[in-house]
Image (cartoon, rainbow, N blue to C red; front, side, top):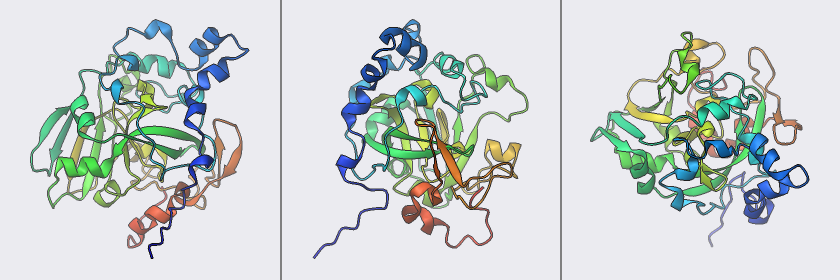
Length: 329
């Protein structure tokens, strides 16, 4: 007799926020507050930007959305409204204040096409591939994920994308590849934060091959049932829900398979606070604040932080033989 044991994050489909709820969030949130003014001014909908090169409505892969939701990845609390997540962005290339709505405005000016991703290092065939070719070579799905920032705030997001392990198999790394290094774009003409000399641009971070081929590691191309707007890290970003958010590289232009451990941007800037592993743990404080609880940016409520952000059953085994490594920084 086959006994199926669901993963710890899994709930019945009726316990997840219904798709119709978040798809229709604009109508519900706009009621009584002046629909056009409220949405254009706060929700991230900016009509004046409709013809800009960074407009997701013109995304060549828009026909692939909404993707089918994978019922194995659900949540125990509602999805954070898009009007909140669209305007609460840690994206230092475009600004250092995540609550500054201008971050989304500035990011919208970044052209989404042409966009290529260089695949190099220890692979059978190094190449540079257009983002649309990558997306159409994969199988898109939607997953509901927790997201936990190292700054002790959290949200719940309906990401669309494909498993990183699917991309790894497609890239065909060689046996000597031990890590995956990811690198973001450099374009100070549209990203004023990259003019700051004290950050070693481009943004770089990485993970082990074991982490990259874990079922949870996810490459994101969309959000809320459509191509992701630029401030989310379009057109291609990483989502590692068991780690602090700075490990999830945004707007990726290069993926390298390497033998040596990559050193991320934040690890270069302040290695005593932001290390390679950065797994979520309520018992290990950041040097300047506690990680025991987190603030939900959708509701403002505080809730206890979960070990590995609630995904311990799926990822704890990745770290069992790492000795004195600082796994939670």
